[in-house]
Length: 407
Ligand code: HEM
Image (cartoon, rainbow, N blue to C red; front, side):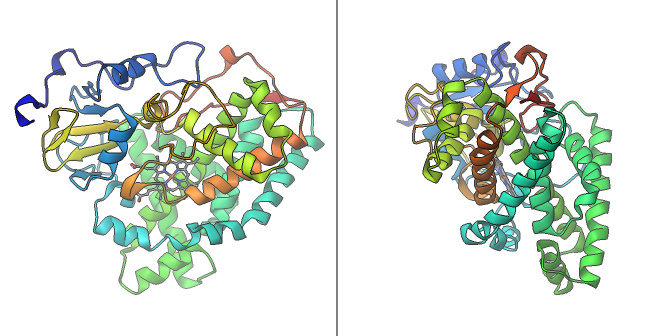
């Protein structure tokens, strides 16, 4: 077996650039060049903005195996880590740490994201969703769905959960957008990060002085007990605030666009009052759209063999879950949006120890949204040509900047 194993770098001279462009007019499909890499083999080399050539793990089964492999590290400061843009000393809390510290910090915030606690929030989320739809229906029969609905829903929810004043949403939405944009200058991103850390740190001070029943107050108690530094608590707050609103907001807007472009599927969802069917539709849209399109990033800490090749210790690894979710070995006719299929095995929330902490919350929010919006506004339609829309090719999270709709 070992004699047939090739070592890293074999394809490096001709490695294609990553990320790759999507095809014109196909906003929901992964880049064709990326799918070609999947057809060509399980492990490929790509070239990043800084000239480095990490490995690309193309197939679903290998992606899950690798993300669950303790011989990989998510630590962005390790040499060889394939970062998506220049790093300027900014930390992003436990999402970029390894166990045991990752597990220690993650455990501090798991409780509010358990299915039971999230289900208890469902009526409040339904109220938020209904209230925003009421506001839309009370105004002129057109809106930008991103500003009127997609961004406020998860922002209101995560603010309530963390104990962040929603009145500050312009500030944190704007700075989050800059922080996760690949096209923003490094200084700009560092400044946005510093502003968010400063904001969360100040808030943490208030929570320590006057604790309330929210997640940040819980972190404040841990700071007081010496379990977490104030800086670590602020960084965790930034991670949860950004992850809690950007991702779900993009799923709401892009999911709506995908449904408007697939009217037969939209009709299935609108005409069903079966919560299981709505939950299934959420899973399929997560699979099909896979909005965290930059791929999971890791670096090998030991040699790892995959498909007859060896990833050497210190080499970077990219796991593009968008093509994992379109792997024909796992999902029949993978490029078809089929709300009736069982898509629960998708990897849109990642896999392994870093698998999305907020997934029960994201699922519940999306179930409420997809189960309500199209029933309450059955005439909802796109108020622009698909070609006029601007997509977030440059962001860590894919989506649409504005979604003009009418009804
Ligand atoms: C549809 C919405 C969402 C999607 C598609 C999504 C996707 C992901 C993915 C792919 C990861 C894995 C990152 C990696 O392996 O490197 C992740 C991690 C994470 N997500 Fe989400 N997410 C969503 C919503 C949320 C929400 C609502 C929260 C709430 C705060 C959240 C909090 C987190 C956190 C804290 C992590 C880091 C987990 C760790 O490192 O242990 N996410 N998410």
